Length: 89
Image (cartoon, rainbow, N blue to C red; front, side, top):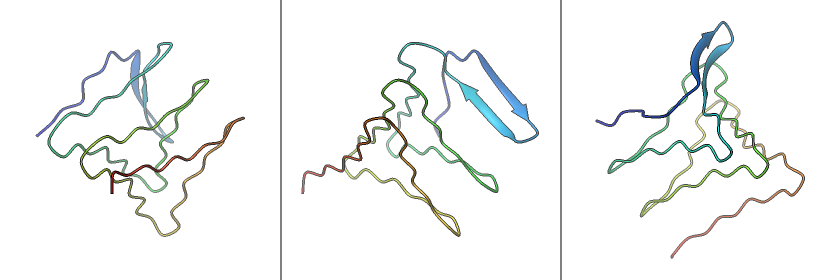
């Protein structure tokens, strides 16, 4: 079983949801285990990356980004929009 470790400024529960803020020039949330999982459970889960050049990097032998929902959406909004899918196979 893994755990969440971060230098966070605040973890606050608001009526509209739970927030984890990692304040720095290049914030990093690293999940290290054999099978790392970041699970967002709510009626409308949101993973928002806000920075000058936001990056969501999945590194493993078989990386997976799974969107489970009635209407799943992956929204990329940026001045220079890039969705890069790379595989060794």
